[in-house]
Image 1: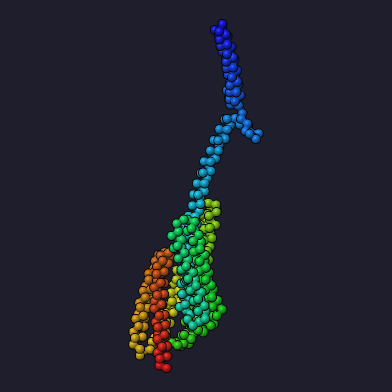
Image 2: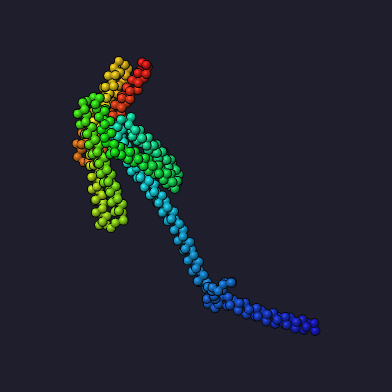
Length: 379
């Protein structure tokens, strides 16, 4: 009896488990079909959104996002490279600007030096020009120091920043020179009679009045020719530069025409610079002869002082030697076949001639200073 009861109970439990197992299996299968679908995934709907995406669409969006990320990185790299190229070009442009400014500064300096050799130091304009000229020298020296500091900077950005400051100082230096040249030009144009009178006073100490007037008129004509040639040279150079800048954005045919015209003007500019150098030399020789006569006259006043005479004689010998050397160099320069070669050689001749003039000026100043001391001591 107990065995029958046990079997009955066991059979009932087995049937219940089978039913329950079948029901759970059906539920699992149903859930799986609802989620995955029979062959493809069902659409997924995100919480708080009306956007419905399949798994395939979702993967496509991920791939697009990755591609955009890669593209963004490339653009950043290109931007960094472009920025580096920009700063590099800025540095190159600044260096070129420095060369142009320095060349212009040196040319202006030569013109101002011609004025110094042709104008008495007691003249008021001489003093005014000297003050402005000294300021331009200070600014250019400062610009050079800033450029040296810029070259030592570690980053391109820092180099460009420092070079911008240097360019500003170079521009100010050239502006000061332009101011000095303006004073000289006004002095020559507005005070021509005064210039002639002052130079006549100098000449009449050594020559008769007729000869003095001829020399002064000759010097004035040379000075006028010099400034006219300088103006023409500047116009040629500026026009050539403008043509080259215009050619950058011109068509191929127009570019060729503009470049050829610029090259032609640049050649004319070099030829004009040769003419200017020869005009300067004539003025220099004229002033050298005037100084020679003045030195002889001053030495006559201190002929009893052997120390002064010996020192001045040595300076004069150096001046004569240098001037002879400068003339020979100029003759060799004029014998060159091309204007470029002529111009290059003449720069050396100019430097030597001006050094000779400097020796003479030193002689005059030495005699005047020591003669004044002698006069004061005798009183």
